[in-house]
Amino acid sequence: MMFIMPRRCCCISSTMTVDVDSQKGFAFSAIDGAIICQKKNHMQVSLHFRVSGRPAYLQVHEGTILPISRFHVDIVGLKTETGVGSSPPAAATGGSDIVQIEQSTADRTRAVFEGCPFELPPKASQLCVKVARLHFSETTANNVRRKGRPNPDQRYFWLRVTVSAIAQKEGATQKYPVLQQTSGRIIVRASNPAQFEGEGELHWVQGHGATDVVHRGQVGINTDAPTESLVWIIHGSVVTAYYYHLMP
Image (tube, rainbow, N blue to C red):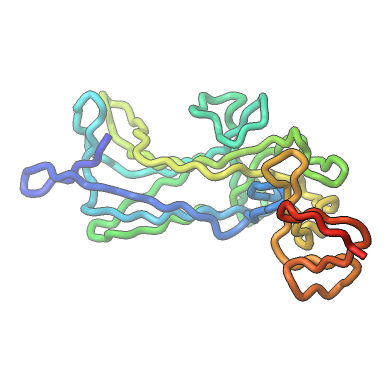
């Protein structure tokens, strides 16, 4: 699918790109290897558009050219019901694949987010569309820690942003997706995060193996003021880099 812009009775192709980012509501957790979101907190998503020529027509797959009336942003959550994957469902068909996104108003009431219409200014080459006060309608499953470590059966959500062109075809208004981006995996926690307090002070994370533990930074053993990446004060034997050292 591509955009077409009329100019002097000719059809000139137009390109549109978008960068999606968030300013509120998300924080990355190295311990979990995922983005963390509190269900009660607002999310804000911004879409930064770059356009070469203002698209006015849309050519659909069968070759039909339709006039564009406006554009529309849809934001949905995705999930998988079985298995713990690091990737979102290939295609969300609705039902159990979809997590509804809600938007709150100034009086704190919430309603299902139905999308955000927008128009491209006639001569602008850049545009920023901000969608604020968003919330996931539910939390991810299996958020509870196991022995202080991330749950091995932790489930995840993903946030998918779709930009569609709105056009009339055979007397009916239809959406035609033209751009789409999907986030990394997200853990959505309940409004009470007490069990996770203090995680910001932890620097040990799981490695590639099931029993691997990784730390980047200074480490002190029997000292609380390490001056090097690793200070060894150990009574016993240590094996490093294939050499065997006997400690006094």
